[in-house]
Image (cartoon, rainbow, N blue to C red; front, side, top):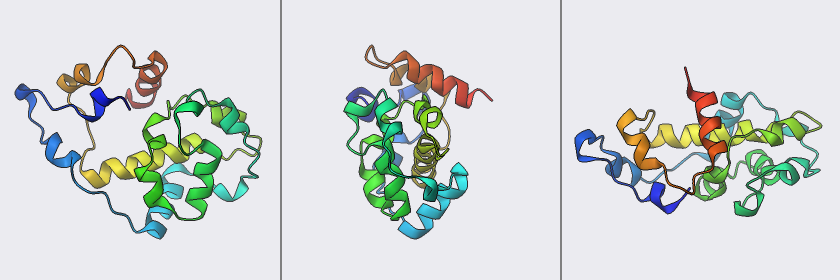
Length: 155
């Protein structure tokens, strides 16, 4: 996530309380959070054989401190606190290249999305107001990220 997105403040015309929610500490019961991630994603991380093909395919690999194949291990080991503090959670483009490449259908991208969802729910942010979207954009935002978000949230 770029600094422009992390450090943004909502427009005066649409004060949503974002700044108060953003600063709320996110705490999880690791076992419970790991179970929630598995339930939301529908993924069985036990199928992972740690081949690293998902990470090799990832276009955001260089930006991540925890790689997609390592993310699966963190969920298995119930080390969710480290995941939510990681920049990898927000660097994932949701392009699902890792999902397509995985020979065992583990779908690490879906695990990452599920972890994002529980973090957002914990912080009390489950929506975006249309007026907030232009503030999130900058010239460094990859277009692939925008297309992935549209594909995912167009309901």
